[in-house]
Length: 195
Image (cartoon, rainbow, N blue to C red; front, side, top):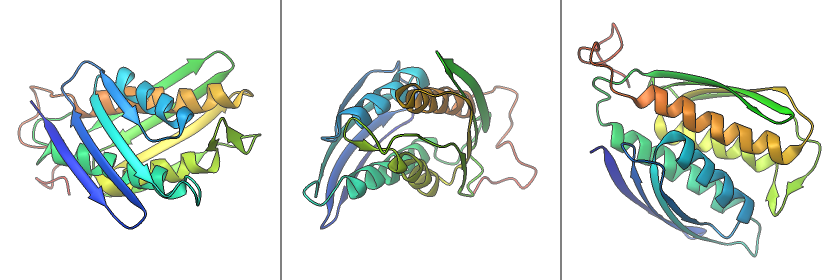
């Protein structure tokens, strides 16, 4: 099985994560940010990734450090689990509807971090989660994983639906990209490396 245990401790946060990318979508997540926990559960479920997260942060300041550092750790967990990326499809994509929301997500585990995030929220918060932190979370994942990720909102008005659709689409795109393709010899690159 492809899995990892990652710990990150700074003066701002302490995060423990276990990830199994060959899982079934089981999760146990606690970050102290309820809607963020819900979104991570959606990623886990729709990505068929078993995910355990326990995060403690300086929430008396705000939730920025906690959310960003969870993203960094998730990215590192994905990268560690994939190892040299031998045999993976590398690319994944999903167009996901959730009621009024329609989101496209495309992922490339190229080893080169890049985020293109094309979406606007009409509220500052969903529950306790600041909507501007959604983009910051995905950027942190990209940096931690060496992931090229595009997320684009095609339609939608309800902010809850939009955010949740993003995490579900991300899960499905990642599941496709990290799947083993028996036709791939080595890695899916003429360079011979994905880094």
